[in-house]
Image (cartoon, rainbow, N blue to C red; front, side, top):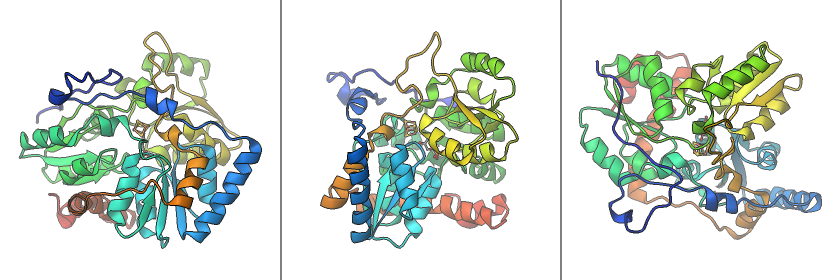
Length: 380
Ligand code: 13P
Ligand code: SF4
């Protein structure tokens, strides 16, 4: 069996020089303009008025809110309070597809809105800010990815949800962090060799856990990439009773220290079920809102992103998630602005791997055996 190979590397935070742009193989991204677009906190009066307006508009427009755990607490609470959902990216996709509303208001980042549109082409999908993207998506341009796939025709292409519709359209399977392990393990058990993109840390974690034969794209999440194993160990010594909860987009040294590794919903579940009073959490700090609300007697501490090698592009908060705000939700519900569109041909192709993931996870929930599912659903 071959081991994983990093065939693509991606640089972040370096401005793309115009002279390099035509030949640039690897995308680069800057967080500065995202931070500049993060909305100001409204005053208490403005906040209450905006929430009232959104509640009214949701009813008038037959709309439902679908929020990710990393967005502002107001958008999480309002989604739940009005019959929507706050969840991980897998449940966001499923909820949006199954809900009867004709408009989905997706608070998160662009790939989440695109996935919703692909699954619900007849629904209107609106987002507070269409420029809210993701370093994984930015770091995996469709043309380069397509060439990477062409170079490995014998491999089953497994792509993380944090990608563009065009990249999904090249995939055999889509995964999120809550189902990636099971899907890759099932594919491996059926004899598949994997081409994985774009997150090298999540891919590395899956490769170590499953022993699958994987070649990988070299992208990373700018938020999770900043968690530090060395500093985390020091913090653990200060809190010897604390359990460590880690999102698998984090580096291997951080994952190695975890008591539980999981998606955002996996982290929430572990915090509720684990018999500890203190937790150190290595994921976006937007997650703290729900963790604290659902576990009143427990203490949650952010895992360190600081230390000697700190760059603090994110300081444990995703700048693109932070671009979502109440005022933009109200504005786009009122005007219909910021609608997500996906090219129809691309949409049809990109839906195939997403449907496979949803069929796999639904069947798994119903107690079916993963290996047989791959063969049944159709691996490629
Ligand atoms: P989850 O699927 O775990 O919610 O993760 C989405 C994401 O963007 C994490 O950075
Ligand atoms: Fe992308 Fe990371 Fe932000 Fe999630 S937290 S949307 S993976 S940049």
